[in-house]
Length: 582
Image 1: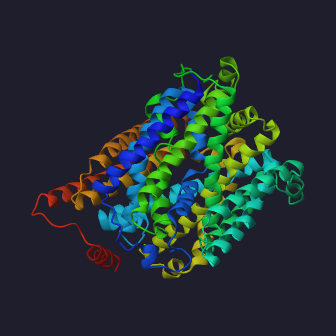
Image 2 (image 1 turned 120 degrees about the vertical axis):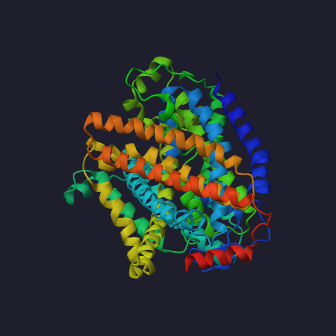
Image 3 (image 1 turned 90 degrees about the horizontal axis):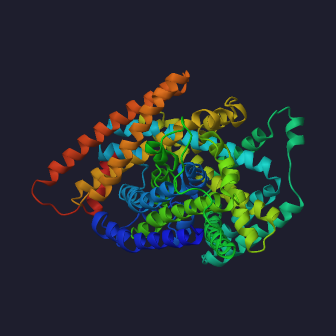
């Protein structure tokens, strides 16, 4: 199968999804109102609440939700064959991720841009909101810890990427100040920023940065751990400064990389006419994880991911200029991530190996496929770039820069979101000092995942990546299912048809609980007495939350059977939210 044919077919389906299904969601399900005063205007403070051009906000939202996950998950999932992975990416993106991301964004905007965990209390009930916050805190801790490990490993393995990655920071700050102070358009400055970033790739190739001597001088056994500390110091600072200074311009620069990477993939595949070396359906060895339910857990970002609802309701909702922009930012961001997942499938299915025998060696078993996912993607992208005349060594650095840029942007947003969650939990339990002190909350948001990232274990991967990461997929997909449940209750209360939300909700909850049960048996059998209790706890939380959501949905449905009422107005929703907050 020519890779170009697959690419064109998938992109055409994504275009249809945006043109038709996203329009249906915007007009009939979420009923977006162009005159609604969004929280970005209502609570504008120049730090977190900043009305933002939809193209700039798309850049922030997409790069925040993307990270390394839509690269890693699909690169692993090809183990079962490229066809099942690609089908899930297409269907998951169009009928699940877009619904989830846009819905979480609109729901938050209609409730003062509050986080999904807190507003669950208003939509379903106090118990559900508390349970949701616990799941969110665990997931964010895991994401921030693991992404720091992934970035640290990539910086050690690709010292040529250090200068472009860290050079992007002052470039983004300069663009942020230029755009904000002069009220100018961001497109041209950000394109110049991308050009400067790629010039730094040549500098990085000529001057690779290896901090191993520094690690040895500090007595640190693994160089990666020095990078991890540096990353968390940076993200603490980045999470405390206004979004327009660094977060928005850096995200906008990185969003251009999606289109550049896609252009390189399409041009490279077209020139080289690469075919899918990977099998459409792979006969995996006995003892491997089964396709059902684990494909739908392995490919989260790139199909549907619970982390997205945290970004939608955390940072994006505070910057949405017009409610109607939610279609472009929320649904469009999901399509952007699906496109990145497509690039990953093509890279590891057609670019990483020249023959089936070579590919089989890279995907000999599930452990080998998982361990080599990032490297396989970088090699595949480098192969496509080499097809159009870019030197292979330089192309490898480009591929590493793409992965690190997306992962670092997700960390930026993840730490800021963790600070919000810490403040929400502190407010819930009455710790006013922690709830009101941004610096103290930021320190807590950094300290917990930093400690987890530095914890030894799991061989060379560290405890977070080598052990606890096995719980990420189920926790992440559980969060997506719970977010869909909250959105479904809210939509039902507004007398819209919730079927577009209920279909992915039922499927996702079924796959997640199935995976939790299977993993629990495996962890007990293997004597994993840390993972087994955590898996059981997550399962109990899942069942509890499903029961709470089902109860809320039944009550909302019964209520809509009563006398017809007009849809809640802006004023009544605001008043109800204010009252609930009090």
